[in-house]
Image (cartoon, rainbow, N blue to C red; front, side, top):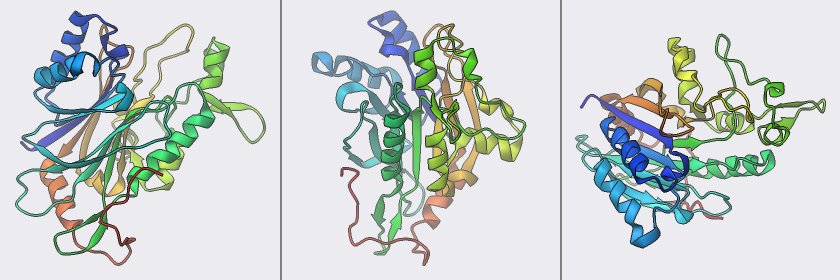
Length: 311
């Protein structure tokens, strides 16, 4: 395996009780053979002794973890990753699922990656800004290596942001707020600028960049000119305005040299969100994670092997 795929997918209402649609969606996702799958809207997955959660693992052929409240889940191919630990977190409307995933069979010690499936609140820019700041806690995990060095863990955050990425020259413009007919939804997706005029909400994306994470699709578009990576991930709805990109991955910048491709996968007929796939070169990723186990004088250090995400 020369590449590994990370996919994030908000499967609408987890099928909404339609078991045929649920099966079709999971068989489709399984056919894509992701190494890690970041899921949102996992409603009812833990009901009936976790019936749907267990079925999902079987259909996908992956090990899964469903977060509290069944808002999110994370799945990993056990032949590609092991998961040393997870984190519980608080302060969310829709709680994320966070696990560290470590590549198997790399020929040496490699750092785990903190992988977080998240679904930020849709109805409040203020609450979403707070949740985005909470997400930065997952970029602040330390790890004690076999040599005794304490190093920062890299992270991949995949999910439904309910807000927009900062655009780049030549890429798609931010949505025109006047095209959002529903006044309530217009408020949900925008905030007041310094002059009092409402602007599309890009706050969390800006904050992620400030703390050392980058939007994977923007990186591919900017560095390789592949603008298709910036394609919309939600369909056009009369009440909610034009199609837009609100799903995706943020990655620690240390991982970006391994990023080979990002694309949007059509989920038409199955969900109101399309899936997003980030493809990484496995060998390059393993090299990055091996090198990162060595101490560096510019890294912050902590006396604790791990810092909890919980406040």
